[in-house]
Amino acid sequence: MQKLILSTFLILLLVPFSQGFSQEHSDNAPTLSVSLANDTPFVYQDSEGHAIVVGVVENNNSLTPVTNVEIQVNFFDDFNPSPIEVIKGKTILEVIPPNGKSPYVIRSQDPNPNITEASVSLLGFDSSEVKPKGLAVYSSEVLLDDELRFSGVLQNGGAPNSDTNVYLAFYDGFEPPRMIGVSTINLGNVAPNTEVPFEISEKIDSRAVGFLLFAESDIFYSDFVDVKIPTPQSLTKLVSISDVTVKDPLGNNLSEIKLGSTVNIESEAWVQFASDQSTNETPYRYYVQIKEARVTPFVEFIGKYDGRFIGTGLQSQTIDWIPEKKGLFFIETFVWDRNNIPIAEQGPFVLINVT
Image 1 (cartoon, rainbow, N blue to C red):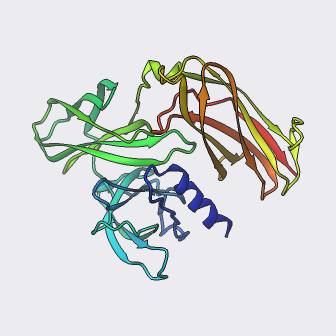
Image 2 (image 1 turned 180 degrees about the vertical axis):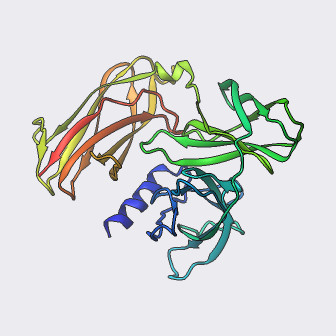
Image 3 (image 1 turned 90 degrees about the vertical axis):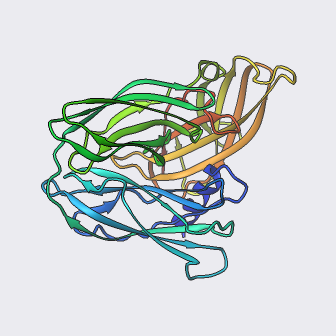
């Protein structure tokens, strides 16, 4: 029950359209060496009303590549226990190398605003011949204004390639990050021992903070290159999160809290200037993310508060939390605008013990 509530809460918080999605992922055990990377694939609705599911598949085998990785997505509404649509798809990479990973993007066949949930499962895969690492990709320029403008270079090894594609797999700022979209640049046939420039200019999801750049052809693939997306200077200087505290309802600071008790997560933000000079106001969206303090952290809670900064100076935001599990947790805070674009650097980490 807790997992279903958390999954629904995550999607309702983070999907920027009026009809929020909940999502749940079938916790199927890894099929031999291949597994879904996490329990919360990203789900959103595109401009045409189709439901889109984005996630990552991992090949955990250290010796054998895999291919023909088939994924099934069941789409549900709020009324029927049976799926209203079942779609099968493949990973972006044709061959996933040993200890490698590949994003996947699966789209509902029909636009349907009634889709509210999606479950993801692995159907199967085949072992594959090794595909050599004969491609390399380099970033030469990345700019962000109304659109992402990115250019780079693909370097090919000593053999002709066909069906050559460069991919940009975008991820968000949460930890661990979620894959939220993939863009494709088709280069087609590439001659041996050549360098091919490429570029892209498109509107991207405002939550993206970076992307993994990689390429694959009929015979070669490349390493993944992590490219950070620059934040416009005007936004990064707008607000600073200066302090984060945990308090009881009486306002006393806490370093340890009791299971089931209500506490307030409070941040102090220093507002440098108002985004709307005519009203002297800055609409914002404040997020609190709480995760278990362990090697592979599980997101225990995400809270959201929409508010408005009035003028400049020191101002505070508060979100209530009732812990449902004992242990050590750390708290992350974010301030974004209403379009989910960060207007402040992430706040300082805070550790809290639940007893």
